Amino acid sequence: MRMILVGPPGVGKGTQAALLEQRTGAKPLSSGVIFRSEIEAETDLGQLAKSYIDRGELVPNGITIQMMVKRLRAPEIRAKGFVLDGFPRTVRQAEALDEELAKEDIRLHRVASLEVSDEVVVARLGGRIGCTKCGEIYHQVTKPPKREGLCDKCNSPLFVRKDDQPETIRERLRVFHEQTAPVVDYYEASGLLKRINGDQPTETVYSEIVAGLTG
Ligand code: AP5
Ligand code: MG
Image (cartoon, rainbow, N blue to C red; front, side):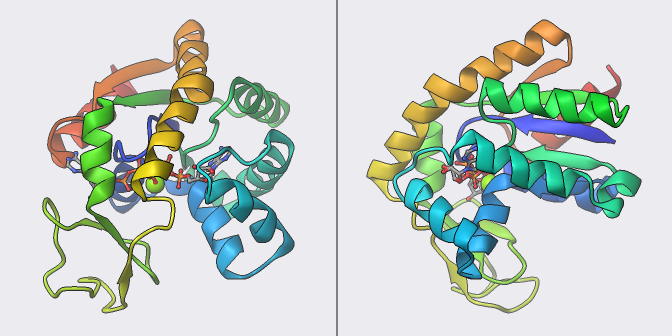
């Protein structure tokens, strides 16, 4: 399976990508997760990306496209398929992805646009906590870990993302409406788009994504 999850910050892209991997085997490729691991490893790319991410801005297209194309060419991704999360996020990135897939003769099955209001985003990101090691995603109110501050799956400490501060969340939303909303129109025009109400329980959203793959 080869698909894209597009949607605003906090809509549940990472949550759904993890479920899709567990249940279908398709590998999640999240540009945000990759950038954060580069920051953690203190690479040159990480340092550059950090200056944008901390402000809620997009990392420049050239750097992002090069990074994602390299990941898409990995043998495991070729073999198992992919769930792109957070990429493409500009029309230029979507065009670059099309060029790459056409070059390799790979067909995209679906683009799921997860949709929620800005108010829901603010409530979700205000309570998000994530695992420092395995990346499992929790929420203080709607999905709390069994033991406070520790991951249910791997026992590692949980953390709050630096870009989950109210001011940065507002900027990320502004950037989404300005630069990523046109990506939804781009895929609507190509006939690959399926719109899904992201303001429903996680399992309902999941079922609608899976139904959209065939319908
Ligand atoms: P990225 O890491 O992609 O962040 P984002 O798009 O802002 O999305 P989030 O990861 O915040 O939210 P999500 O949709 O994954 O939601 P989640 O599942 O965690 O990007 C970060 C930054 O990197 C960008 O701002 C940019 O600077 C840079 N970047 C990344 N990609 C780029 C690109 N292509 N080009 C340029 N720059 C790029 O869920 C959120 C919370 O809600 C959790 O607490 C979860 O438990 C809860 N939740 C999830 N689903 C539900 C539900 N159905 N009901 C109730 N609660 C739910
Ligand atoms: Mg995410």
